Length: 296
Length: 238
Image: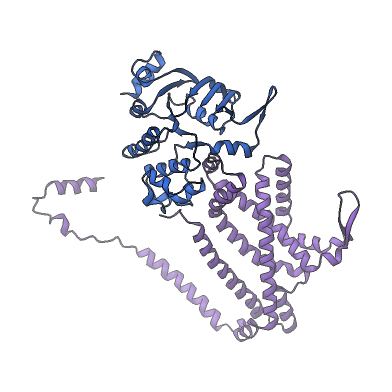
């Protein structure tokens, strides 16, 4: 305040001879020595870490390179991608059904959705996967027919639910519970006046959801959905307990044979990092698509 | 054309509208005045069934809004039917409520209109701008064009200029004046007394959920019969 008033005073007396005219004053930015010191300290740690990565023979970079594009690793990578893709599609399809159910005025739908989300968020994925894999102990046959009545088609559980099927089922149900909450958060983030405007225009309900609500909800859904997708990608590694040849299971098989644990864990790590980077790039473009009208 | 007959509306224990009876002939402009909390907005929202009335009837063009009479009973209409009824009643909100992810033209198209409606409110040149790129006055004019998209029999305006900077009020009132001149049936909740005096056929003064008095501007504004109307006008006309 005193600076301001003295500046105003200086402007008020342009004839003052001790001070040069205001236009000639040079602005000197404030110095930040601690920024330089902090940056230097962090750089030293980073460089030391990189030095260790290169020079420590324990990483066995040559072994890493040898296995990185190895045939069985590539096949395992494909299975990881399949599990991620199918889990995401089924999970979000479930989430898009569960979220409006949970927001519904119908108490049966609301309670069912709430219970589903509660149960499948509570059970650890690994426990759930083992449950599905052992479904045959609970129900040795599954049939489609009239509820509590006669059945038309009947299957042996073990033929219907393979290890891969059990893995997919577990991932999809687990994912659906999380996706439901992400979609619900998105729906709640849209200003209620938007739906009121749509209702006042007489736009049909389904069209309101598709054209007005969802595109705006997507802005809040996308960052969380991308987060969840990355989580899912990594969660597929848990599926190793069902002896499915995805990435993590496959590198375990290889190092079980040759004992080169660290470079093979590194193979899996680097692939997970690359896939996550790819998802992040995808996220960037999809988010840009849905920011239409929200940036000046 | 619009008939309200003994309309009551409460929110919980608070009675917002008490026995409101009102007739609005086709092609006329009715301005509703009243202090804050007097039930003006609720009255408008009852006409297009954004709020359900507790008692009484709302008719537009002789058609009961929100209900179907079967014998001695009123059956609430399905949401699909209510949406159809609403399509013929335009509504302009205080906060515009344009769809932010759509351009001006897309907003109007969503209601079934086209570029000619943007032209009518003088914004054909802004067809491809998003709401966020428009001033408040322009947004409200797009919202009016959008409301016209359904070719409504009637347009309800809920304080259309209250959220605008003072210098932008005029352009919105100009558009409304044009609509009135073209014979659009309008019910307007506003605090713009000048506009009311110039454009309204009827002025309705509402206080604590009741219609205190109604009549042409020359009577209600210049020779109010009720003390409450006089008190309100003396505050607004300063």
